[in-house]
Image (cartoon, rainbow, N blue to C red; front, side, top):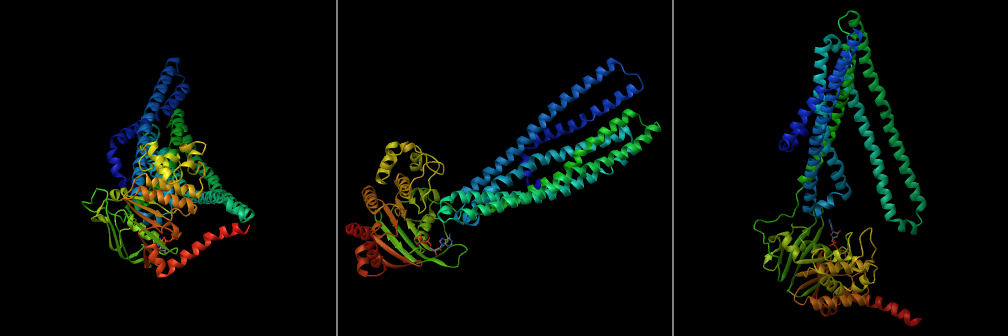
Length: 586
Ligand SMILES: Nc1ncnc2c1ncn2[C@@H]1O[C@H](COP(=O)(O)OP(=O)(O)OP(=O)(O)O)[C@@H](O)[C@H]1O
């Protein structure tokens, strides 16, 4: 029952509508006693031959009025209770979503997206059941049980009542026990189903790769195994499901048997009338649902508590990026001073960056180059405040970047990541993602500099072409250029290109870089690249290896140093020439 205490903030807020609903439920329980009683009275009137058309009509009218009142009251409690349950689900869903949007990279590394989605659906549904079905079951089963048993005691016979209700608690026990087993097995079946779903999703997404590697047969075999598993797990569910009804019928049946044996004796002894006996039998029937429901209530509470705990755990996760008190709201501008003595990723023992420092004057360009895993992206992550804990200081303008609000800092930065991501909307809205009110003219300027305008206008729907999973699929290079346009349209103080020209050819790359340089004369740029031609015109280039700066200088200075940079440059020059040599040979 602890879950109701934990949710007391909600019940306190909505106590009025719960109160109205529970009063309505109570009245329904009382009204339900009337029809069986009327049937009993009519039977007795027939047996004693006192029935008249008038008396029959009177009973009929009462029956109709009772039915109408029940209808109205049921409507009242349903609207109130189900409405509240939806409201609780909405509040918790909004809290979770807001929390998700505030969390940092560490959080998303810890939890898989699929699991977060599952929390946002299954766990919230379980909570809704607590505030809806749980409350109804509790109020309804308690009120019906107390009111009906009292009526049986008072209207019919207390000895008969005591004996006949002996088997009923077993109903609650059996429905709880079997319900629990059913739930465990049902979860197994659901897991098997979601495992198959994941497998199908992965296979369909990777269908080209499966075909290329000739793995169709193996893939189909694996699919068969998974579907066999689903059948096996569902068979276990049906075994328990098939036990459910017979067990319940057995228990209810024994109640009726006791009632008939004892009730029969009481009729013969003239202690109760036939009509009262009929009423009594109907009342036993009315007690079945509450007993059954109490068993179900435990399951609802158990599931709800587990779900609430899981949601609380998620909500208690704190983002490591905390805004300082009095953080500056103005987007930063000016020189950048990066001085990091040491940085480790959380949960990692390895030092990702060691003694990395550089200054970029406003309007200058910094190039960062190095082997994969050298720490290039790590530098950018610190600049973007994905992580705040490191020894050192990063200044943008006059302030440490941790002294700005995250919104203000990110407003000054246009970041084009390595893996481009397009949203399921038009290309136009993908480009003006930072501000959907920007004009077509501005979108086109950004697209032209990113050298994607011509590609877009040649598409059937131009700028209205839909992208994302269900839209047209753009080539890797096209996606990269849309991403560049998206960052560029913000006209950011600092633009960061994280290997974002890798999929475009050298000539296009040169044009884009030239365009950027012209447009962003007074603004700062950081280019990370594997291809040296992408950053050779930078004002300073740093070479990273295993998280440390091993070489630095301008392109010419680095060539003179005759180190890794020079070696890479010569190698890449040669690679570029090979196709030309090939053409000459033809
Ligand atoms: N989230 C993370 N948690 C732990 N270690 C990480 C994480 N991200 C990166 N690393 C590690 O930090 C080191 C530097 O990685 P980083 O991504 O900065 O390299 P990079 O130079 O950008 O490589 P690439 O050119 O392949 O993108 C690597 O050893 C990597 O394994």
